[in-house]
Amino acid sequence: MNLMNQMDPQSKQPPEQRDHPAHLYLVQLDPQSVVDGVRYDDTYLADEIRTCGTMRETCPVCGDGHLQLVLRQKNVRVPHLFCLECTRCFGAFLEDGTPALIE
Image (cartoon, rainbow, N blue to C red; front, side, top):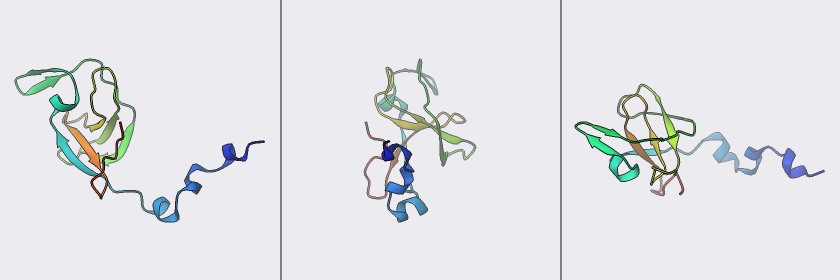
């Protein structure tokens, strides 16, 4: 029997990481720099973009919804977080400035 399959994945993290999850710093991104699409007046439209899940972070601009994770895919050049409420894109960075979303 393989004991690695039965271990709790959080038990591998140091206690300080389990107790205090990393704080993300969010930077608003121009949608044209992260997603292939077309700008119409005040709107930027892109086809077939799938979100991969809801994050714990809420939108720093509208504050209404939890941000959605968008990973690289056909029309997405850079992984980022997306607000469904105000349709803004955000880059996520750790305290030391390194990107939290690895390509």
